[in-house]
Amino acid sequence: MKHLISYENFKNSVNESLNISNEHVMLREDYNSNLTVLKNAITNKFVCTIYYRGEQRGVVDDGYRYIEPVAIGVNKSGNTVLRAWLTKGKSRTGKLDRSLVPGWRLFRLDRISSISTSLQNFTVARKGYNAKDKHMTEVMFSAKF
Image 1: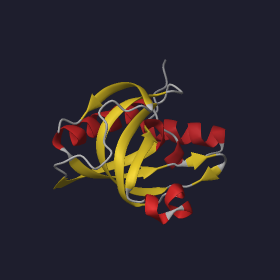
Image 2: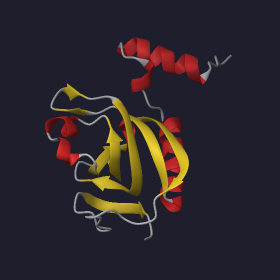
Image 3: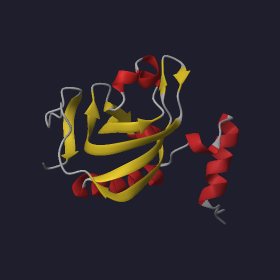
Image 4: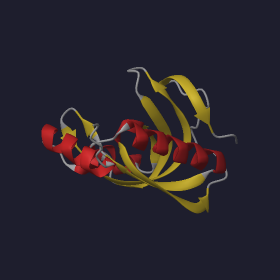
């Protein structure tokens, strides 16, 4: 007889075995759901709020980011990434230089644990937008301006 467990129990058991908290585990189901929500937000140019697990060179910078998402692609390391205009929110780069927020950012999709879209739209690309993003080896999906 096969044993079935709920999604939450599975996620909790994975977290316990790896000794990490719930917000840092993303299953394929979450990833696909986030991808669908982001594609819809990009198509309709919805302003979004994401909770992002930021980390660079051992410095963790988790928190909410308020963004205008414009493209999804693959970076040079092979990660699926989101190109977005960061309007406000937690930002390690912004702490180092406040003039860099607002500004363009790349977010790895596997580090986005939650997304909410608003009904607020953005209608034009921010200064510096380039549909052929040089930080992506492939642009898979992008906004039409």
